[in-house]
Each structure stands twice: as C-alpha cells, then as structure tokens.
Amino acid sequence: MVKRNGETTYKETSFGIIPRSKLIELEIEGIKKAWDSILQSKKTKKCISRAII
Image 1 (cartoon, helix red, strand yellow):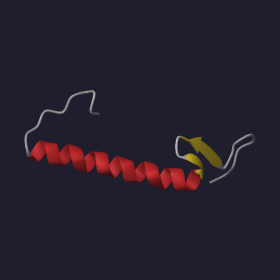
Image 2 (cartoon, helix red, strand yellow):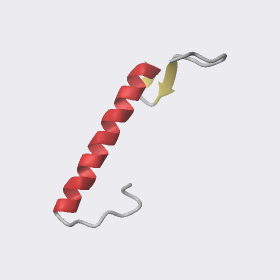
Image 3 (cartoon, one colour):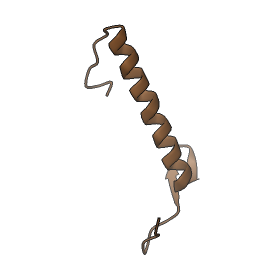
Image 4 (cartoon, one colour):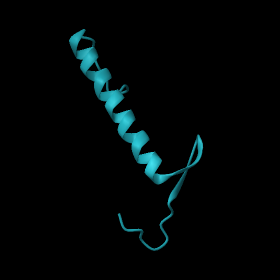
C-alpha cells in the first residue's frame, strides 16, 4: 500500500488513536461478526430491519 501526500498512518477513533493497519483488521472482524449475526437470525427466521443493518 502506498502512502499518499497528507495521509496519516493513524486514525483517531472513539477508542483512541490506532494504526490504520489495525483499524482495517477491526473493520474486517466487525463485518464478519455482523454477517454471522445476519445468517444466525435468518436460521431462526427473525426479521431484520434496516435499523439493525
């Protein structure tokens, strides 16, 4: 990955300042958990509203 001019390698979040490389890993983990949750609710035939997604 190439760093662009003015781009930082850190991101300020509600959890503090973390490296962007760690942020990407956390985003992937969150997406996987959300997808698992959607699949689980599909098995139990629960309704998924737009607010949840």
